[in-house]
Length: 204
Ligand code: MG
Image 1 (cartoon, rainbow, N blue to C red):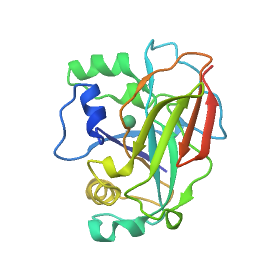
Image 2 (cartoon, protein in one colour):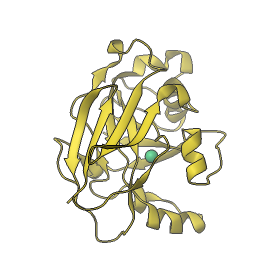
Image 3 (tube, rainbow, N blue to C red):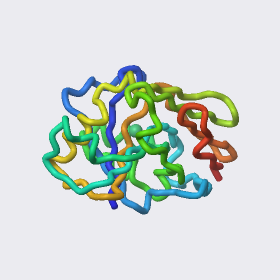
């Protein structure tokens, strides 16, 4: 399986990092070694002093496809989980300044904690109005709603599948809302979809 991720998909997050609003989705990937499951702890890596949390909804692909038309895209994902797109912001900022690829700042070991439970799409009355949030040590840090997505889930699937064959089990991080910020050793991160707690782990 592969992990695809969309950058810059919520306007207020683009503003907080002073990024340009993209005309097409910004795509990057993480290797499967980035995944943390079972609420496993995240070990703060020695190569960074500025690891940021980015809470994101994660789509699960349920059917192989390429060149998927947007109108058929909803047949290709069946469930939504929540994950953290951990980012070594100090490394990413240096790479961005040189127009170099971000991979090491986004794809390092443990950079993708993901909920064990995924909620099937049919359980959402409206997939364009899904709330999700992140608390750090019980304090609300990020709250998002899919009504604020610049590129919809269906558009993302269609766009990604022009370049990459999507396969069953692939995961797509769909972008983070505003409120990203640093984590420190000892923090507990808790992520929710609506009011259901789906992910909780410690930074060690
Ligand atoms: Mg992100």
